[in-house]
Image 1 (cartoon, rainbow, N blue to C red):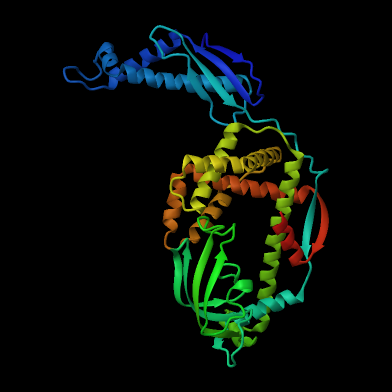
Image 2: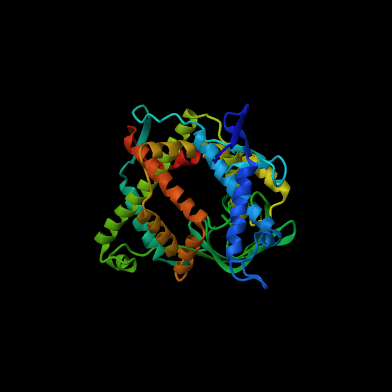
Length: 443
Protein backbone atom coordinates (compact mmCIF):
# COMPACT_ATOMS: atom_id res chain seq x y z
CA UNK A 1 0.00 0.00 0.00
CA UNK A 2 1.82 3.11 -1.27
CA UNK A 3 2.18 6.35 0.70
CA UNK A 4 0.47 4.98 3.82
CA UNK A 5 1.54 7.14 6.76
CA UNK A 6 1.88 5.62 10.24
CA UNK A 7 2.86 7.74 13.24
CA UNK A 8 3.30 6.31 16.76
CA UNK A 9 2.15 8.47 19.67
CA UNK A 10 4.03 8.33 22.95
CA UNK A 11 2.18 6.59 25.78
CA UNK A 12 2.92 6.49 29.50
CA UNK A 13 1.45 2.98 29.71
CA UNK A 14 3.76 0.31 28.28
CA UNK A 15 0.80 -1.95 27.55
CA UNK A 16 -1.10 0.63 25.53
CA UNK A 17 0.05 1.68 22.06
CA UNK A 18 -1.38 4.50 20.00
CA UNK A 19 -0.87 5.17 16.30
CA UNK A 20 -2.18 7.76 13.86
CA UNK A 21 -2.74 6.16 10.47
CA UNK A 22 -3.35 8.19 7.33
CA UNK A 23 -4.63 6.45 4.19
CA UNK A 24 -4.04 8.44 0.97
CA UNK A 25 -7.17 9.39 -0.95
CA UNK A 26 -5.70 7.83 -4.13
CA UNK A 27 -5.78 4.37 -2.51
CA UNK A 28 -9.36 4.85 -1.32
CA UNK A 29 -10.53 6.19 -4.71
CA UNK A 30 -8.88 3.31 -6.59
CA UNK A 31 -10.56 0.71 -4.43
CA UNK A 32 -13.95 2.42 -4.48
CA UNK A 33 -13.76 2.71 -8.26
CA UNK A 34 -12.86 -0.96 -8.50
CA UNK A 35 -15.82 -1.85 -6.26
CA UNK A 36 -18.20 0.22 -8.37
CA UNK A 37 -16.98 -1.35 -11.62
CA UNK A 38 -17.27 -4.85 -10.19
CA UNK A 39 -20.80 -4.13 -9.01
CA UNK A 40 -21.74 -2.63 -12.36
CA UNK A 41 -20.98 -5.96 -14.02
CA UNK A 42 -23.28 -7.96 -11.73
CA UNK A 43 -26.16 -5.62 -10.91
CA UNK A 44 -29.48 -6.03 -12.70
CA UNK A 45 -31.52 -2.88 -13.36
CA UNK A 46 -34.56 -2.30 -15.55
CA UNK A 47 -33.63 -0.51 -18.75
CA UNK A 48 -30.05 -1.75 -18.84
CA UNK A 49 -28.53 -4.86 -20.33
CA UNK A 50 -26.69 -7.17 -17.89
CA UNK A 51 -23.15 -5.92 -17.36
CA UNK A 52 -23.87 -2.60 -19.09
CA UNK A 53 -25.08 -0.51 -16.13
CA UNK A 54 -23.12 2.79 -16.06
CA UNK A 55 -20.77 3.21 -13.08
CA UNK A 56 -22.29 6.60 -12.19
CA UNK A 57 -25.73 4.95 -11.86
CA UNK A 58 -24.29 2.29 -9.55
CA UNK A 59 -22.56 5.02 -7.54
CA UNK A 60 -25.84 6.87 -6.98
CA UNK A 61 -27.60 3.70 -5.88
CA UNK A 62 -24.94 1.86 -3.90
CA UNK A 63 -21.98 4.22 -3.61
CA UNK A 64 -22.29 4.74 0.15
CA UNK A 65 -22.40 1.00 0.81
CA UNK A 66 -19.35 0.31 -1.37
CA UNK A 67 -17.40 3.15 0.29
CA UNK A 68 -18.30 1.68 3.68
CA UNK A 69 -17.11 -1.78 2.61
CA UNK A 70 -13.84 -0.36 1.24
CA UNK A 71 -13.18 1.61 4.43
CA UNK A 72 -13.80 -1.45 6.62
CA UNK A 73 -11.37 -3.43 4.47
CA UNK A 74 -8.74 -0.68 4.63
CA UNK A 75 -9.09 -0.31 8.40
CA UNK A 76 -8.45 -4.04 8.90
CA UNK A 77 -5.57 -4.16 6.41
CA UNK A 78 -3.79 -1.10 7.75
CA UNK A 79 -4.30 -2.21 11.37
CA UNK A 80 -2.70 -5.58 10.58
CA UNK A 81 0.21 -3.78 8.90
CA UNK A 82 0.72 -1.60 12.01
CA UNK A 83 0.76 -4.69 14.24
CA UNK A 84 3.13 -6.60 11.94
CA UNK A 85 5.55 -3.73 11.30
CA UNK A 86 5.79 -2.92 15.01
CA UNK A 87 5.91 -6.57 16.12
CA UNK A 88 2.93 -6.07 18.39
CA UNK A 89 1.12 -8.98 20.06
CA UNK A 90 -2.37 -7.54 20.71
CA UNK A 91 -4.07 -8.46 23.98
CA UNK A 92 -7.49 -7.50 22.63
CA UNK A 93 -8.92 -6.22 19.36
CA UNK A 94 -7.61 -2.77 18.30
CA UNK A 95 -9.97 0.20 18.60
CA UNK A 96 -10.32 2.71 15.77
CA UNK A 97 -11.17 6.39 16.22
CA UNK A 98 -11.53 8.33 12.93
CA UNK A 99 -10.47 11.99 13.04
CA UNK A 100 -13.52 12.79 10.94
CA UNK A 101 -15.79 11.09 8.43
CA UNK A 102 -14.30 10.15 5.06
CA UNK A 103 -14.65 12.81 2.37
CA UNK A 104 -14.26 11.97 -1.27
CA UNK A 105 -10.95 13.17 -2.66
CA UNK A 106 -9.33 13.65 0.77
CA UNK A 107 -6.92 11.53 2.81
CA UNK A 108 -8.50 9.62 5.68
CA UNK A 109 -6.91 9.59 9.15
CA UNK A 110 -7.75 7.54 12.20
CA UNK A 111 -6.23 6.85 15.59
CA UNK A 112 -5.67 3.23 16.54
CA UNK A 113 -5.45 2.18 20.20
CA UNK A 114 -4.27 -1.31 21.00
CA UNK A 115 -3.33 -3.07 24.22
CA UNK A 116 -0.33 -5.35 23.95
CA UNK A 117 0.52 -8.52 25.78
CA UNK A 118 3.15 -8.01 28.46
CA UNK A 119 6.53 -9.68 28.31
CA UNK A 120 6.54 -12.73 30.58
CA UNK A 121 9.81 -13.91 32.05
CA UNK A 122 10.36 -17.55 31.15
CA UNK A 123 9.60 -19.92 34.01
CA UNK A 124 12.72 -21.79 35.14
CA UNK A 125 11.38 -25.24 35.99
CA UNK A 126 14.74 -26.28 37.48
CA UNK A 127 14.36 -23.66 40.20
CA UNK A 128 10.66 -24.18 40.85
CA UNK A 129 9.87 -26.53 43.73
CA UNK A 130 6.42 -28.03 44.11
CA UNK A 131 4.97 -30.40 46.65
CA UNK A 132 3.90 -33.88 45.61
CA UNK A 133 1.29 -35.14 48.07
CA UNK A 134 0.71 -38.77 48.95
CA UNK A 135 -2.20 -39.74 51.15
CA UNK A 136 -1.28 -42.22 53.87
CA UNK A 137 -2.86 -45.65 53.68
CA UNK A 138 -5.65 -45.93 56.21
CA UNK A 139 -7.59 -49.23 56.49
CA UNK A 140 -10.34 -47.36 58.33
CA UNK A 141 -11.15 -45.47 55.12
CA UNK A 142 -11.85 -48.70 53.29
CA UNK A 143 -14.00 -49.84 56.21
CA UNK A 144 -15.91 -46.55 56.03
CA UNK A 145 -16.76 -47.24 52.38
CA UNK A 146 -18.06 -50.69 53.30
CA UNK A 147 -20.07 -49.14 56.14
CA UNK A 148 -21.53 -46.55 53.77
CA UNK A 149 -22.60 -49.28 51.37
CA UNK A 150 -24.15 -51.23 54.25
CA UNK A 151 -25.95 -48.13 55.49
CA UNK A 152 -27.22 -47.32 52.00
CA UNK A 153 -28.62 -50.83 51.71
CA UNK A 154 -30.14 -50.67 55.19
CA UNK A 155 -33.58 -49.63 56.39
CA UNK A 156 -35.05 -46.89 58.53
CA UNK A 157 -36.82 -48.48 61.48
CA UNK A 158 -38.80 -46.70 64.21
CA UNK A 159 -36.95 -46.67 67.49
CA UNK A 160 -38.33 -49.28 69.85
CA UNK A 161 -37.85 -47.32 73.04
CA UNK A 162 -38.59 -43.63 73.47
CA UNK A 163 -35.43 -41.56 73.77
CA UNK A 164 -34.02 -38.24 72.67
CA UNK A 165 -33.01 -37.80 69.04
CA UNK A 166 -29.30 -38.21 68.34
CA UNK A 167 -26.84 -37.97 65.47
CA UNK A 168 -27.54 -40.43 62.67
CA UNK A 169 -31.25 -40.71 63.47
CA UNK A 170 -33.79 -40.12 60.72
CA UNK A 171 -36.78 -37.99 61.62
CA UNK A 172 -39.98 -37.81 59.62
CA UNK A 173 -41.15 -34.21 59.79
CA UNK A 174 -43.46 -31.58 58.36
CA UNK A 175 -41.90 -28.16 58.01
CA UNK A 176 -42.79 -24.71 56.76
CA UNK A 177 -40.13 -22.04 56.32
CA UNK A 178 -40.54 -18.26 56.27
CA UNK A 179 -38.25 -15.29 55.71
CA UNK A 180 -39.45 -11.92 57.03
CA UNK A 181 -42.83 -13.51 57.65
CA UNK A 182 -43.26 -14.57 54.03
CA UNK A 183 -43.38 -18.23 52.91
CA UNK A 184 -40.06 -19.50 51.64
CA UNK A 185 -40.28 -20.85 48.10
CA UNK A 186 -39.56 -24.58 48.25
CA UNK A 187 -39.41 -24.34 52.03
CA UNK A 188 -42.44 -26.50 52.80
CA UNK A 189 -42.73 -30.29 52.94
CA UNK A 190 -44.81 -33.10 54.45
CA UNK A 191 -43.43 -36.38 55.83
CA UNK A 192 -39.89 -35.34 54.93
CA UNK A 193 -37.25 -37.81 56.09
CA UNK A 194 -34.23 -35.96 57.44
CA UNK A 195 -31.03 -37.63 58.60
CA UNK A 196 -29.50 -35.58 61.37
CA UNK A 197 -25.88 -34.72 60.75
CA UNK A 198 -26.02 -35.58 57.03
CA UNK A 199 -26.03 -31.91 55.89
CA UNK A 200 -29.40 -32.27 54.17
CA UNK A 201 -30.77 -29.21 55.87
CA UNK A 202 -29.66 -25.78 57.08
CA UNK A 203 -26.83 -25.89 59.64
CA UNK A 204 -27.88 -25.18 63.19
CA UNK A 205 -29.91 -28.27 63.93
CA UNK A 206 -27.29 -29.64 66.29
CA UNK A 207 -27.28 -26.85 68.84
CA UNK A 208 -30.71 -25.33 68.62
CA UNK A 209 -32.68 -27.51 66.26
CA UNK A 210 -34.12 -30.99 66.31
CA UNK A 211 -31.41 -32.71 68.27
CA UNK A 212 -32.47 -33.74 71.76
CA UNK A 213 -36.16 -33.31 70.81
CA UNK A 214 -38.63 -36.16 70.94
CA UNK A 215 -41.38 -37.66 68.83
CA UNK A 216 -44.62 -35.68 68.68
CA UNK A 217 -42.97 -32.33 69.43
CA UNK A 218 -43.63 -29.10 67.53
CA UNK A 219 -40.53 -26.97 67.20
CA UNK A 220 -39.88 -23.44 65.97
CA UNK A 221 -36.39 -23.16 64.51
CA UNK A 222 -34.71 -19.77 64.14
CA UNK A 223 -31.92 -20.49 61.70
CA UNK A 224 -29.65 -18.60 59.35
CA UNK A 225 -28.61 -19.68 55.87
CA UNK A 226 -24.80 -19.86 55.56
CA UNK A 227 -23.11 -16.95 53.79
CA UNK A 228 -21.76 -19.40 51.21
CA UNK A 229 -25.14 -21.13 50.71
CA UNK A 230 -25.49 -22.48 47.16
CA UNK A 231 -28.69 -20.47 46.58
CA UNK A 232 -27.17 -16.98 46.62
CA UNK A 233 -30.51 -15.19 47.08
CA UNK A 234 -30.84 -16.93 50.48
CA UNK A 235 -27.19 -16.72 51.59
CA UNK A 236 -26.82 -15.14 55.01
CA UNK A 237 -30.56 -14.61 55.52
CA UNK A 238 -32.44 -15.48 58.73
CA UNK A 239 -35.32 -17.93 58.45
CA UNK A 240 -37.97 -19.36 60.76
CA UNK A 241 -39.11 -22.97 60.36
CA UNK A 242 -42.17 -24.45 62.04
CA UNK A 243 -41.45 -28.17 62.40
CA UNK A 244 -43.62 -31.07 63.53
CA UNK A 245 -41.81 -34.33 64.42
CA UNK A 246 -43.95 -37.32 63.41
CA UNK A 247 -41.56 -40.22 63.72
CA UNK A 248 -38.05 -40.91 65.01
CA UNK A 249 -36.23 -43.70 63.23
CA UNK A 250 -32.78 -45.18 63.33
CA UNK A 251 -30.90 -46.43 60.33
CA UNK A 252 -30.24 -50.15 60.57
CA UNK A 253 -27.40 -50.97 58.15
CA UNK A 254 -27.36 -54.08 56.02
CA UNK A 255 -24.93 -56.92 56.64
CA UNK A 256 -21.59 -56.73 54.84
CA UNK A 257 -21.67 -59.94 52.82
CA UNK A 258 -21.86 -61.20 49.26
CA UNK A 259 -25.57 -60.33 49.09
CA UNK A 260 -24.71 -56.70 49.90
CA UNK A 261 -21.96 -56.75 47.25
CA UNK A 262 -24.47 -58.02 44.66
CA UNK A 263 -26.84 -55.16 45.52
CA UNK A 264 -24.06 -52.77 44.57
CA UNK A 265 -23.25 -54.61 41.33
CA UNK A 266 -20.35 -56.79 42.44
CA UNK A 267 -19.93 -60.57 42.48
CA UNK A 268 -18.82 -60.80 46.08
CA UNK A 269 -17.32 -58.89 49.02
CA UNK A 270 -13.78 -59.37 47.70
CA UNK A 271 -14.64 -57.69 44.41
CA UNK A 272 -16.50 -54.90 46.22
CA UNK A 273 -13.52 -54.20 48.48
CA UNK A 274 -11.21 -54.11 45.46
CA UNK A 275 -13.55 -51.53 43.95
CA UNK A 276 -13.40 -49.58 47.23
CA UNK A 277 -9.61 -49.37 46.89
CA UNK A 278 -9.95 -48.04 43.34
CA UNK A 279 -12.54 -45.48 44.43
CA UNK A 280 -10.34 -44.32 47.29
CA UNK A 281 -7.27 -44.15 45.04
CA UNK A 282 -9.12 -42.02 42.45
CA UNK A 283 -10.49 -39.78 45.17
CA UNK A 284 -7.03 -39.23 46.65
CA UNK A 285 -5.55 -38.65 43.20
CA UNK A 286 -8.13 -35.94 42.50
CA UNK A 287 -7.58 -34.35 45.91
CA UNK A 288 -3.78 -34.29 45.62
CA UNK A 289 -3.90 -32.98 42.03
CA UNK A 290 -6.26 -30.16 43.05
CA UNK A 291 -4.09 -29.22 46.02
CA UNK A 292 -0.86 -29.33 44.01
CA UNK A 293 -2.40 -27.16 41.30
CA UNK A 294 -3.70 -24.63 43.81
CA UNK A 295 -0.33 -24.35 45.54
CA UNK A 296 1.43 -24.05 42.17
CA UNK A 297 -0.87 -21.20 41.10
CA UNK A 298 -0.37 -19.47 44.45
CA UNK A 299 3.39 -19.76 44.02
CA UNK A 300 3.27 -18.41 40.46
CA UNK A 301 1.06 -15.54 41.61
CA UNK A 302 3.80 -14.50 44.05
CA UNK A 303 6.57 -14.92 41.46
CA UNK A 304 4.88 -12.83 38.75
CA UNK A 305 3.60 -9.33 39.48
CA UNK A 306 3.59 -7.65 36.04
CA UNK A 307 0.80 -5.33 34.92
CA UNK A 308 -1.97 -6.93 32.89
CA UNK A 309 -4.03 -5.48 30.00
CA UNK A 310 -7.13 -3.70 31.28
CA UNK A 311 -9.15 -5.03 28.34
CA UNK A 312 -8.44 -8.63 29.33
CA UNK A 313 -9.30 -7.86 32.96
CA UNK A 314 -12.56 -6.28 31.83
CA UNK A 315 -13.47 -9.41 29.84
CA UNK A 316 -12.63 -11.61 32.84
CA UNK A 317 -14.75 -9.43 35.13
CA UNK A 318 -17.60 -9.68 32.66
CA UNK A 319 -17.34 -13.47 32.78
CA UNK A 320 -17.27 -13.42 36.60
CA UNK A 321 -20.33 -11.14 36.77
CA UNK A 322 -22.26 -13.37 34.36
CA UNK A 323 -21.46 -16.39 36.54
CA UNK A 324 -22.49 -14.53 39.71
CA UNK A 325 -25.77 -13.46 38.12
CA UNK A 326 -26.45 -17.06 37.12
CA UNK A 327 -25.56 -18.37 40.59
CA UNK A 328 -27.82 -15.84 42.28
CA UNK A 329 -30.69 -16.28 39.84
CA UNK A 330 -30.49 -12.67 38.65
CA UNK A 331 -31.72 -12.42 35.06
CA UNK A 332 -30.58 -8.82 34.53
CA UNK A 333 -28.22 -7.39 37.18
CA UNK A 334 -28.51 -3.71 37.96
CA UNK A 335 -25.68 -1.31 37.29
CA UNK A 336 -25.19 -1.03 41.04
CA UNK A 337 -24.84 -4.82 41.40
CA UNK A 338 -22.34 -5.03 38.54
CA UNK A 339 -20.28 -2.15 39.95
CA UNK A 340 -20.19 -3.83 43.37
CA UNK A 341 -19.18 -7.19 41.86
CA UNK A 342 -16.46 -5.63 39.73
CA UNK A 343 -15.02 -3.85 42.74
CA UNK A 344 -15.08 -7.01 44.85
CA UNK A 345 -13.60 -9.32 42.20
CA UNK A 346 -11.17 -7.00 40.41
CA UNK A 347 -8.09 -8.46 42.11
CA UNK A 348 -9.28 -11.99 41.39
CA UNK A 349 -9.80 -11.10 37.73
CA UNK A 350 -6.31 -9.57 37.50
CA UNK A 351 -4.80 -12.68 39.11
CA UNK A 352 -6.62 -14.98 36.69
CA UNK A 353 -5.47 -12.99 33.68
CA UNK A 354 -1.87 -12.83 34.93
CA UNK A 355 -1.73 -16.57 35.66
CA UNK A 356 -3.35 -17.29 32.32
CA UNK A 357 -0.60 -15.34 30.55
CA UNK A 358 2.11 -17.15 32.53
CA UNK A 359 0.68 -20.58 31.71
CA UNK A 360 0.19 -19.57 28.07
CA UNK A 361 3.85 -18.54 27.91
CA UNK A 362 4.94 -21.89 29.38
CA UNK A 363 2.74 -23.70 26.88
CA UNK A 364 4.18 -21.73 23.99
CA UNK A 365 7.81 -22.26 25.06
CA UNK A 366 7.32 -26.00 25.43
CA UNK A 367 5.00 -26.42 22.43
CA UNK A 368 2.07 -27.72 24.47
CA UNK A 369 -1.06 -27.96 22.35
CA UNK A 370 -4.55 -29.43 22.27
CA UNK A 371 -5.31 -32.13 19.72
CA UNK A 372 -8.64 -32.43 17.96
CA UNK A 373 -9.17 -35.80 19.68
CA UNK A 374 -8.66 -34.25 23.13
CA UNK A 375 -11.16 -31.52 22.28
CA UNK A 376 -13.69 -34.01 20.91
CA UNK A 377 -13.32 -36.30 23.94
CA UNK A 378 -14.14 -33.46 26.36
CA UNK A 379 -17.16 -32.36 24.30
CA UNK A 380 -18.37 -35.98 24.17
CA UNK A 381 -17.97 -36.29 27.95
CA UNK A 382 -20.00 -33.09 28.37
CA UNK A 383 -22.69 -34.40 26.01
CA UNK A 384 -23.01 -37.64 28.00
CA UNK A 385 -24.05 -35.59 31.01
CA UNK A 386 -27.32 -34.85 29.17
CA UNK A 387 -28.80 -38.23 28.11
CA UNK A 388 -31.07 -37.86 25.11
CA UNK A 389 -29.73 -34.38 24.31
CA UNK A 390 -26.26 -35.32 23.09
CA UNK A 391 -26.91 -34.06 19.56
CA UNK A 392 -28.06 -30.71 20.90
CA UNK A 393 -24.84 -30.32 22.92
CA UNK A 394 -22.68 -31.12 19.88
CA UNK A 395 -24.60 -28.63 17.74
CA UNK A 396 -24.17 -25.96 20.41
CA UNK A 397 -20.37 -26.29 20.30
CA UNK A 398 -20.41 -26.38 16.49
CA UNK A 399 -22.33 -23.11 16.34
CA UNK A 400 -20.53 -21.30 19.18
CA UNK A 401 -16.83 -21.01 18.48
CA UNK A 402 -16.29 -19.07 21.71
CA UNK A 403 -17.64 -21.99 23.78
CA UNK A 404 -15.35 -24.43 21.97
CA UNK A 405 -12.38 -22.08 22.45
CA UNK A 406 -13.19 -21.94 26.16
CA UNK A 407 -13.04 -25.74 26.34
CA UNK A 408 -9.77 -25.72 24.41
CA UNK A 409 -8.32 -23.14 26.82
CA UNK A 410 -9.33 -25.26 29.83
CA UNK A 411 -7.68 -28.37 28.38
CA UNK A 412 -4.53 -26.41 27.55
CA UNK A 413 -4.37 -25.00 31.09
CA UNK A 414 -4.65 -28.46 32.65
CA UNK A 415 -2.02 -29.91 30.31
CA UNK A 416 0.34 -27.02 31.08
CA UNK A 417 -0.16 -27.41 34.84
CA UNK A 418 0.51 -31.15 34.51
CA UNK A 419 3.66 -30.39 32.52
CA UNK A 420 4.95 -28.01 35.21
CA UNK A 421 4.11 -30.40 38.04
CA UNK A 422 5.91 -33.18 36.20
CA UNK A 423 9.08 -31.23 35.37
CA UNK A 424 9.59 -29.01 38.42
CA UNK A 425 11.63 -29.99 41.47
CA UNK A 426 9.52 -32.32 43.58
CA UNK A 427 9.24 -32.33 47.35
CA UNK A 428 7.35 -35.42 48.54
CA UNK A 429 4.88 -34.89 51.38
CA UNK A 430 2.87 -37.67 53.03
CA UNK A 431 -0.37 -36.55 54.66
CA UNK A 432 -3.57 -37.98 56.02
CA UNK A 433 -6.80 -37.49 54.12
CA UNK A 434 -8.06 -35.18 56.89
CA UNK A 435 -4.89 -33.05 56.74
CA UNK A 436 -5.21 -32.72 52.96
CA UNK A 437 -8.85 -31.63 53.27
CA UNK A 438 -7.87 -29.04 55.85
CA UNK A 439 -5.17 -27.65 53.56
CA UNK A 440 -7.79 -27.21 50.87
CA UNK A 441 -10.29 -25.57 53.23
CA UNK A 442 -7.70 -23.13 54.58
CA UNK A 443 -6.94 -21.72 51.14
